[in-house]
Figure 1 (spheres, rainbow, N blue to C red):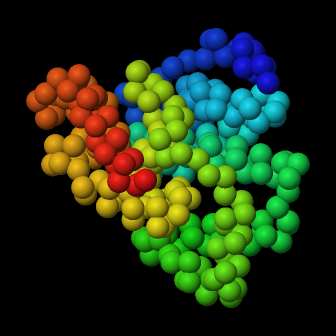
Figure 2: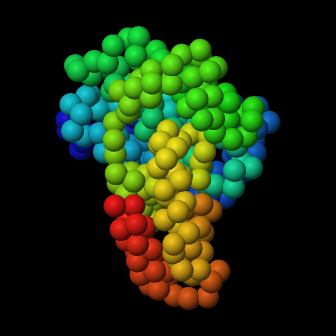
Length: 258
């Protein structure tokens, strides 16, 4: 699939606007008040995010225009559902939404198909999980999902496993201003996370094994969405030191998990 196209779906990607964080904040306040023009400007200002994400699906064999359109749907859903009280950057929230939308599209159009009944169970389980979290402010157990859907636990586990494409937690999915966003960066966004519950517990345990300074850096970088420069200013060390300690911490976590 050629990824060098300048024009995708009639959009000249070489001329896409790029919003600053301040501009995003101002536009989003207007969006919350129902300003449709601000919503359109915000979406256009984040199309580079969609363009960056679809690069990782270059080997899927799908048409780039189709992937871009699906990614834009994920972007619009992110705009409509973004909660500013989460205290995370919009890109941190939007990336898993966009990836999820594209992955669902690829699953539904894959030549190796999961049966319709299994997909239906899996999607019902995911929707039930999201609804439960909004109502109870916590993730449900597999048993609770099974009880709500009145299905055996084994059916829920098998269905979710059937539609899940495993990816590395350390796989880069987006880069902005020199800071790379990895899959693992999304562990604080519980409303849109589809990783297994056991994996989440393991990650928390891995973080707890870090030194106090490494723990602080990981928290600031991946839970608060701060850049290395911002972290350096907050804990009064150089950016180079932050980079070195962050890499060391991620390596330690990876060693703990494996």
